[in-house]
Amino acid sequence: MEKTGLNKVDLIFEEIDPKEVLIKASKMTSDEIIQNMLDSGLKGRGGAGFPTGLKWKYTAAEKEPEKYIVCNADEGEPGTFKDREILDRVAYKVYGGMAIAGKAIGAKNGIVYLRGEYRFLLPKLMTELESFHKMISEIGFDFKIRYCLGSGAYICGEESALFESVEGFRGEPRNKPPYPTTSGVYNKPTSINNVETLVTATMIIKHGPASYSQLGTKDSRGSKVFSISGDTPTPGIFELELGMSVQEFVNEFGDGDTKAVQVGGASGFCVPRKKFQDTIIGFEGVPTGGSMKLFNSSRSMYNVLHNYLDFFAEESCGQCTPCRVGCQQLLKGVEKVKKGEAKSIYLNELVKLADTMKIASKCGLGQSVGNAFKTIVENFREEIIY
Image (cartoon, rainbow, N blue to C red; front, top):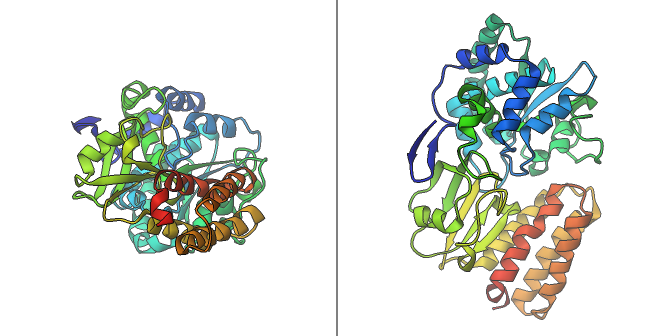
């Protein structure tokens, strides 16, 4: 777990001997593995940030004998491309994390739900999976993994919509409760984890929770792989400690004229220049699944917002009215204001609509539309009005 520079870490892509780590895990009890996750402070790397150890603990407590580990590799958030790189370079760590999680919760079956656009990776991933199955069989793990391909629906990144898709149905979110730990895929207790979360679990078993928890902050332990794009001289994938300020991030990756950073993709928060110094990248500030887009003064924030709203209106599954109608009305509303067909005060009504969507929408898609909308309207109102 070597630091390679200011806030930069080499953990996710560190080459390891997976057999050594899995032999170590095989000698641990379920409770010991779960306690390692709890002690490490690891939170889900998909963006929601639920403690991984708790998720495994709750699933392990279920008495149902048939359980599942699901890897969410449906990387559909605009601006995020780090899971693709992880799968391409260290898929064996993903498989290892799934096997470790399987032992922790008592599951014998794992499913990788792979984004349809990543189909080109499948031949290589299947070859590596075959080798992995042989290795864990020698160790004594009773665990099998299979792949399921998505079809390009953003909504299937939501865990219960993903389960519906795996089962062969239209990808639509389910009502909660029950939660996946009780009734997930095939209505069986399920722990669903992001690609990066599972890799990190593998590395926690290798290095130990104490070593891992030294990275990051009290509320945001560890490191994170960021997909960095936009107006930056150094786009790409970088692993950084959590807890840095947006200003520190911009100092490293900005082009000298950064006026805003979109943290967390279309469903995330837009941080303006005046808030760079006081905004922390982490769960105590602005959490992110990995997408970091930088915008300089040449960019119209109205165009950025319009692009996001157009995306959400297209990707809403249409199941619930607040999201289905709300996305359309937000898009139409900002268009009216920009054209002068509605007064600027109408933006205040649209903000109220975004707040309502956050409360009333069935799943995270509708609930998160307001994140980008409100932060762009509040901080770049003049670019929408004029």
